[in-house]
Length: 583
Image (cartoon, rainbow, N blue to C red; front, side, top):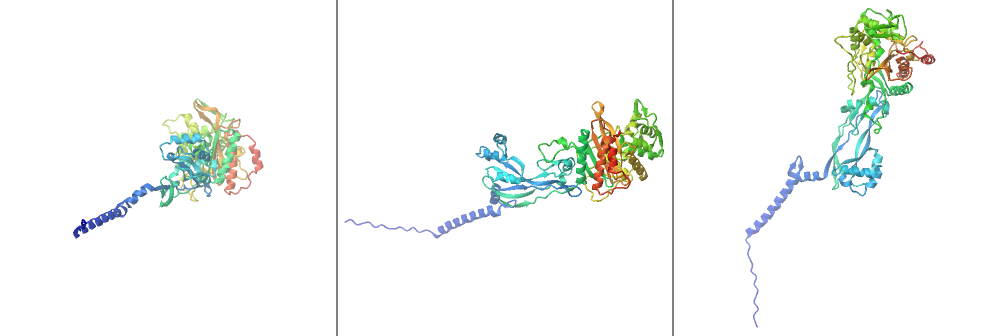
């Protein structure tokens, strides 16, 4: 029997130092690893963020804009004229939405044809953002978003709403779809009204959907409010009367502006044509033009009141000075100027009452153009009003090195120069305010009386007011401007409109500039009707009655007590039935 060999175990002895070396290396690697993790997540910062935290936030954290509320525009009594209402805009990620099985459903929810939606997605191919619909009512927008169609999202915004609609549209103006002012006071005070958007952070998932808000980085700051000088009650009244006048006279366009006689504040300003700022579909940029401030006209005989000032200041005339207008016409150069009939001898007051071209021509030839031009210039003719309103006209007061005789004469009765209706109204505030010319304000002064300029002696302003009152009397051209219960004053004007070939024989502009009441004026109102149709086209026939109705309502709204010994409404109505020539 063979002996089985025994197996023996060989034990290899390991030196202790090797064990400690390996252990030390492993521990060192662990320390390095932990140090690196600590460095990336805690110590190594980039603009205040740990590196890995920053990288994570780059991939999942987004910053969104918080829309800011645009300031409210109100009238002088706090009635809102422009407010911002919350809306939701529907937008999409074209990369997610293109080719989606939900397109037909989405088109139905949006109320638009499917081919139209598909064509829009093609135009935005390769983009990550496009609007589907702007400014939806929140309840309607939430109904669409509730279907959770992939790639369709909502964004909160604000939309401008104008409670007064077309009544104050051309003064207040309008904003664009991004809530920026593009016309009127919305444009001129855009920086004041516009708020400052805020910022917030939110976490998004892999599909780009918002998971939850993290917090607000910067709160939105709303815009500042704007309080206008207009009284919305008077604005509605003037709008109604202007639309009525346009319909009755067939005029192409028109404007009415009313100023506070003691402060220069614009109490109402309306125009025709109008536009509805709440209807974007019918909006045309040209309709925003504010005729009262942008359009410049020859003012015609309304300037004879200013020529009267020059005559009285000369010391050669009083309101009782007799002027012979026989035979009812006068030749100046090649031009023959004539009155409707031969008035014969008449006082200076009668010349203005009857709006005699012959009488004013004789005064102009006697005075020369310099004193008349000086009065016009002192009363702000041909100078910007400085309201800051977009497109504000400055008018034109000619200053020629050499004047022809006919130019000196036509200047005296309102031809050869241009004014805006607001400039004309401002000039008449000097008569209503003891000879002090006030700056015009579109913003409420809150009872503060502005500093004006003394442009004529108080006694001369008082004399002019008396003459303006006589113009509305039974012998004047503005009989139909009378107001039941009040004595008023004013001056009519009728001018030929200008075309490409010069003055148009059968196209007129009718004007009336008036003050009410006559003794202690509270308002100054200018009425302009462009292109009235029919036989009645003069300022006394078509513009003066509009003033009468506006002044009647305005004085009532302003709580001006009626005066004694003034014709009643029945007498006024009878006078209105008499068609005046109305120069």
